[in-house]
Image (cartoon, rainbow, N blue to C red):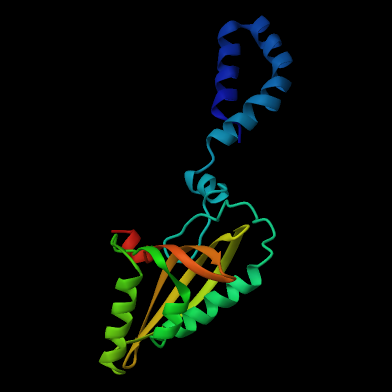
Length: 208
């Protein structure tokens, strides 16, 4: 099928007469080489363009773009920090007061996903209240994925995806958070001095 621009060119040649027709024959290779590809590109469907776009990627929850973060530099104590994080999450899943006390520094600044800033005393009070309430009701298990460690001497950043699976009776709900912790090593011990938690909206929440 001949494109509209080429047909228009032939009509123009007919109007110009025989001399115009001869010139059009000479121009035809140029039209086929350059005009047709441009026309085809312009007529490509929006859906096809969107599917080939590098930004049209999928991910967990409402994250629709792949991470553009560069690979982190080797962290000498990454293994120790990851081990500490996983031990903490195991302890947090059972409201282990001693594990919370070990993990959080006394000068902690914790920014919750709800937009509230608290300190270690607030965290410990909440944990003790939950421990006093005893078992029963909702139980939440915490795990970490996509862990990234960046170390700067005795300071380190630990970024990860926190997955909280809450179970109540036969029902289980899963929530995802992007957490970033700043750790400081003092007296040979790593502790979190700052913490930022951001809830990842579900696909249904992101569409609202």
